[in-house]
Image (cartoon, rainbow, N blue to C red; front, side, top):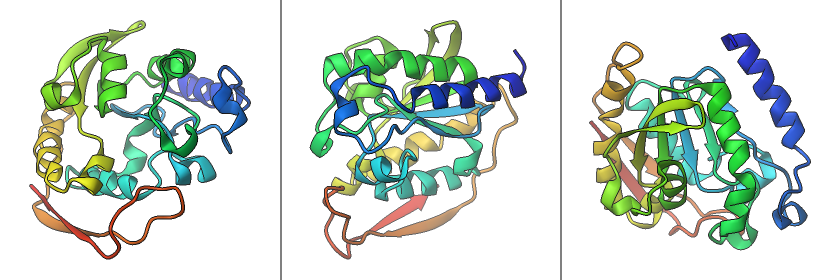
Length: 229
C-alpha cells in the first residue's frame, strides 16, 4: 500500500472510530480524539489520553503540555505537522484519571492500526502507559527514558524511544532538562531512515497561564525556561 492509499485508509479509519463504544468512556467523552499530523510521518508520538482541551477540540496535545511538545519539536527542526501524534486512549477519562487496564485493552487495536498505516521509523512514547503498552515491558519511564529499542508493533518494526510526558514538566520543571537531553537524540534516530535534522541553538520561554477548568493545574504566571540545545 503506497503513502496515498495509507493516508486515505487512515482517514477512513478515523471516521469509523468517531462513534466508538468499545468501553464506557464513550458515555462521558465529548468526542473521540483519534490523532493528528502527517499520515506518512517518520516520527510518531504516542501519549496517554486526551485531557479537557483535547476532549473539547478533538486534537491530541492541545493544551499547555502540547505547547511544550511543540517547542521541543521546533528545537530539532520539526513542526507538529511533520509528525503524527496520537494517544493510547482515544477518549478522555473522567477528571483526567489514569487509564484503566480494560480501557487500554479496548483502545489498543486503534493505536496499532494507526502505527500500521502511518509506518513511522521512530515511535516516541510519552510517559508510563504508552511506554509499557508499546514496549511490552513493565519497566517505568524513570528507568527507560532516553533508551531506544527496536520493537515489532503488529507487522511494523519501529525504533521505540520512551520519553517523559511533557505534562510532567509542567508540574516538575526539573524534568525539562531530561526532556531536552532526550529530544536532542531524536535527529540521529530519525537519521536511520532520513537525513539528520539540524538543531538550532536558542532558548525558548513558555509563559504558563491559568489552565482552563479541569485541565492541568499549573501556577498562574509561572515561567518555564527551555534551554533548547
